[in-house]
Image 1: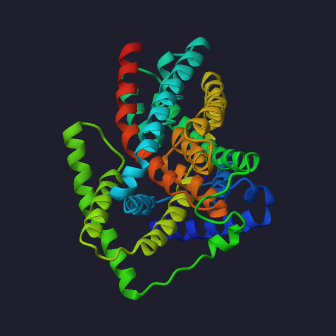
Image 2: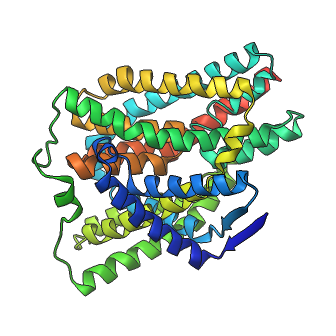
Image 3: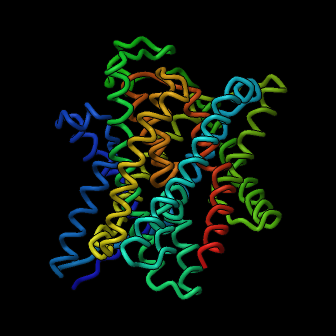
Length: 397
């Protein structure tokens, strides 16, 4: 089998091509546009499918340096941090609290379902955690970290199972998010309060704003400042708590502080410019992340894990459709948050943001959702999930 290795420059070029491919397919295939499937997802999964076919046929395996993938991820989440201001915090406090309660509930529910089904089918019940919040709420990073811990505990195959379940979660979470929100919006005739409902997706995509060289430079420099200081902040948080957080947490917090300092001194803040850089970074990051998925790992899942994952999909759809939407207010913001909730509860906060971006690009903005989902999905729930996983592993051992 030939192994084709792409360096980080080839990888980012590939991501750009896959984004364009996904954009074309989203415009040409009505179902993609109707159900708000993100363009990077379409292009990335197409590449992952081709790579899987080549691998299964023993022809070739394409791998690439994902260094810039991490960079783009950190840039995007830093731009999200810049959207947080104290007035928004006061307005969105209730939404964040409710979303966090729902996230805690689904964390326990995922582990109960995973452990229950895997144990009932004769496998080590602790492997059920790999098909629970370790891989789903936690995502690939948590799956890799706890997989190693569980391997050292003598739980055979925990690392592979965790990463395979995380892969499944990333794909299924991306696929389910947009359609679920779109169905709620159509069924209840929900209208975005911040933008006229008859604005087309194409008009939103081509939306423009006036800027200057100085404003763009200022926005970019603020972004780089938050990235650098945030790296240090993240390391300090890890040292203090003993919990390994995603690399972008420190940058998000730093960006929020910088934003409020800029607001406090009444300086002009280049929000549109930073948002533009964030959207570009998200598209490239997501295309690279999905292109790198090794879908053949799903084939190696044992029957108990496959059964547990199928149950998790059903659980998530029921929970979001009948609980999250109603608890969050049964309005347009609640529909957008439903898409985001599926994204981070089945895989990663980046998927949540991509799901919401696909919905809001077509139906209009939702500041409340864009604030609450990343705050819960990338910060608060990491603390709680680590405690839940550790506690359940200790209880089951």
